[in-house]
Amino acid sequence: MRLQDPDGTLTDMALDAGTRLGFRLAAKGKHCLGHHTVHGPADRDHVLCPARAAATKGSQCEQCFVLDDSRLIHDFHRGGRVPPGLRAYLMQPHWLYVATFATGASKVGTASDLRKWNRLAEQGAVVARYIARAGDGRVVRILEDMITRDAGLPQQVRAAAKAAALVAPAAAVELDAVNRRLAGEARTLLAGAGGEGFEVVDERWARPELAANACAPAARHAYPHDLGTGAHGFRVDSLSGSIALAVLDGSELEFVVNLGQLKARMIELGDHGSDVPAVQEALF
Image: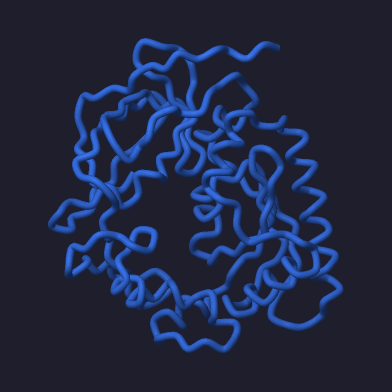
């Protein structure tokens, strides 16, 4: 969990199985996190929002959104112009993958060579397979668009849908079968597409061990409190991307908490706790 102090200092807070996380919301609304200037494959600068403005576009103000290099990535393969640093990032090898989430919803996506494993871990995939390795980011995005057009695989699954799916995940064997089938269909399309600059691959992604419990079928509940207000506290038992499987103080019930909802919010860490709601265990 990455925290940004008011002076811009970034602090990484490790979340592991058994970590207790307590915090309260210190201000209303979301605040701009600034923007990034990309200089190369592994070199970028984080620039603080000069106006310390409220966030109006996700986690950014209008000005920082316009200045952020990453917003140009999605039009690069359509002839869009990009600055030299971002071009250097995009011209490194990239991977094309098919990811499947806890109730079978799936997507096609891309990851740079340097972020091949991390990208899927952050996405919160339950199972995924790499289906192609491309020489650069332009080729891989052309392939991604082709898979969406011809195989019907979307390029996004909403974070809220991922969190809702973890309340009642499907069995691992079912999700693996869905992913294997979709990845196979996509590979067939790639193999028949011809062209240069990529190779078809068949490689399964290794999911983080910390995500195992969150992805396993079990009786659990959606976290009932709004992370945009009030005080919260719980023990983290498992993490799938930014979604935690957590236990509230005074209860052994498991709750699915979408920690991604904290992005761009101002919090104060401390010995806080969440109220335990009245819930009814599902009958099996």
